[in-house]
Image (cartoon, rainbow, N blue to C red):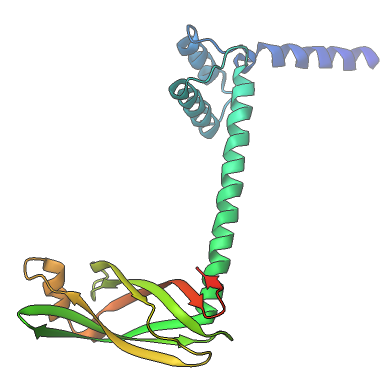
Length: 218
């Protein structure tokens, strides 16, 4: 029985050593090694792409892979990928928490639109209201919004609004009208002018809140 176990371990060792993944990386033999690794069936497609991508990245960055086996290179690539995924997940979680806090602290709504002309200038205008749900007074705020038509197609993006002139006390609301220059040669401006407000979908994103006590939410 002991002899059988030792034989099995020896065969496993030989199989492991014979894997092309255990070969040392070589620029000269890379094409041949890649073919052997592929034909060996030792790698899943995802790992093969990861290995190839890491080798390419190392070449572009001038990082030497000499004296490393293909398995060691793959393990290095996997470690980096896992770290990146964990970092991205952490950043996403933090962003979601900030968004939740922002949404609970302030509500901003655009509730009407218009078109106005004054002094030979034309404007698309929007009426908006901000409600301060936090326990602190707001002294400045910033938000942006995009506009979509009834089909869901974007007809306006990058609208940004900042206010530093009005204090919104805790529990209070503030309403006003904002104006954006109208350009008769821009299709989106024309479509926005001619659209009914009830047919529009407006995505409002609070971006920064500054409180009178100096604290900032963003």
